[in-house]
Every structure is written in C-alpha cells, then in structure tokens.
Image 1: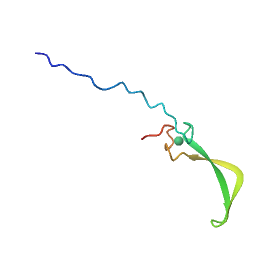
Image 2 (image 1 turned 90 degrees about the vertical axis):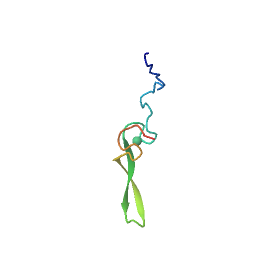
Image 3 (image 1 turned 45 degrees about the horizontal axis):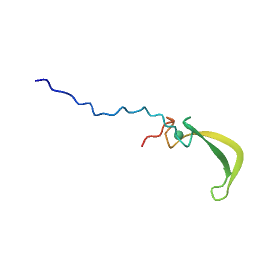
Image 4 (image 1 turned 120 degrees about the vertical axis):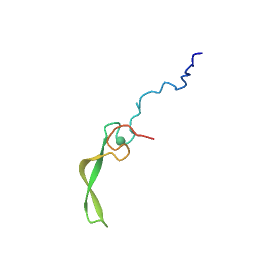
Amino acid sequence: MATRKTTTTAARKPAARKCPDCKGTGETTETVRVGSARKPRETADRQNALCLTCFGTGTPSD
Ligand SMILES: [Zn+2]
C-alpha cells in the first residue's frame, strides 16, 4: 500500500512586493537638518540612508 503525499502547499509567489518607502531600492532620501536639536533647520541637501522599513533589502517582510 503506497502512501500518498498530498501536496497542499500552494504555489507561493516569490516576494515581489516592493518596499513602499524606498520603492525597492533599499535606500531612502532624508533631508539634511542643521542647527540645534531644539531648532532644527532643513537644508536643500539630501542624504541617502538605509531604509528602515526593509532594512535595505527593498522588499518588506511581514
Ligand atoms: Zn525600504
């Protein structure tokens, strides 16, 4: 008597979702602030920062 394996695992798609914060790049652009902590002033400069939503992977994990 042969044992049958029932494959119930649905075909899962690979994580194709992109991180909404960095659009899948893994990096976000932040505004550079200067001045004191009490009175920060935003500059026109932007700096790249590691996306904290996906931690640089570009695909958020649940
Ligand atoms: Zn991200």
